[in-house]
Image (tube, rainbow, N blue to C red):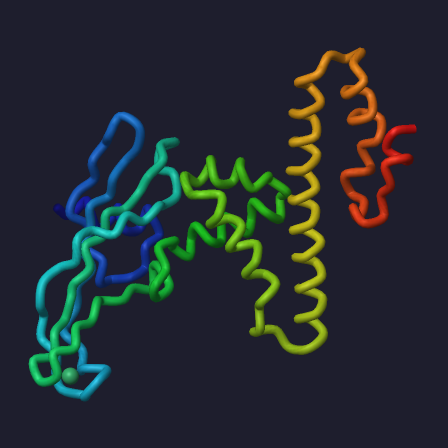
Length: 213
Ligand SMILES: [Zn+2]
């Protein structure tokens, strides 16, 4: 199908080793069926020429929404075998980092949304990924090494501040949720509403007296 070539462009998938087989419209989402294949490389273990073996069962890779529908890719990756030392290897793609499930393009989107101060749960929902994936991405920021001296420190600080902002937004939302469970005139409602700044305090510096006044 020649059209599938255009789909590659539309989805901005730059790896020529990914071949599209089909796109399935499900009720709740779209599935892109694709395979990753290329000539057998030499063995990373002994250097002999490997041979094509079979395909792995499809990896489920979340992708950007298409036409407003959550979309995921079912990517079958080629396996290679070394008949000299029996080493097996799986085809690699620039689409996702080695041993990762989340495409770079999704990671970029997470970063963008974190900067826009979208909450972590909203990001997870919007991109059909787990909240822990978003948190992992947030943690990544603090371990960037590919920046030279001063810019590295600045980057770290800015991202930490953003991380704290996102966390505070989340805490604030939880506070409102808890608050709204109580009657507006109750003993519980008033302090939660009035002392909202307490949520930002170091718990070691709080005393019961202060909370109760
Ligand atoms: Zn080998």
